Image (cartoon, rainbow, N blue to C red):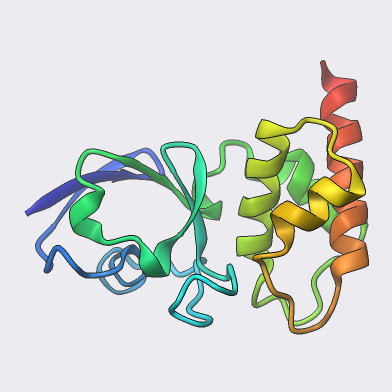
Length: 154
């Protein structure tokens, strides 16, 4: 039995320790925002936060996560008021939407580390999150808008 906290709720799961977190979230806990894209941590569709850092859940073994805290997009406090989510809506970032939860979780992590990132910093950090629809200019604009909003709140 492996115990971890997901979105503020403690869970015990009885699965093989090598099972990826992605499948624990989706198949065991019914949390489906993290998507399967590639299975090798190259696309970012499965990005979640583990102890505050953006991590690819498809390559995170559940056995390594005992006692850790996992946050998916469903677990964001005040999700509807989150500056990144608001900027995503304002800039109409999603097209198909498949990658968006991973993109948002990566962007939040970026802004937690670098409150006012440059274009180059955004491109570097976000380059591991692929968008089939190619909305990269809107993603960058939304991150800048979220950074400005966060700075205005301080």
